[in-house]
Image 1 (cartoon, one colour):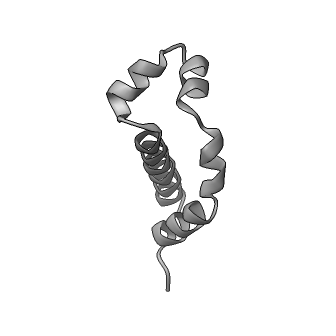
Image 2 (spheres, one colour):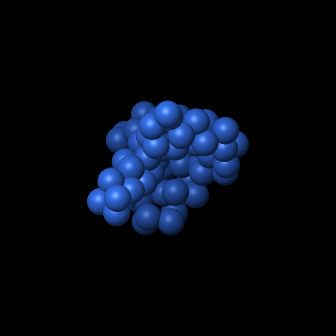
Length: 68
C-alpha cells in the first residue's frame, strides 16, 4: 500500500508545470514584499517553489492525519 504522503508527492511532481506561473515578482506583489526580499529568504524561484510544495504537502498530510 502506498502512503498518502507518497501519493501527494507523486501528484505534486506530475503537476509541477503550474509552478512556472508562480513567479517571484507575482508572489512578491501579492504578499506586499519585494522580489529581493523573496530572493533573500528562498535564494531563487526554485527555492520558493520547493518551500511551497513542502508547505502544501505538510498541510495536506496534517489535515488527513487529524481527520482520520
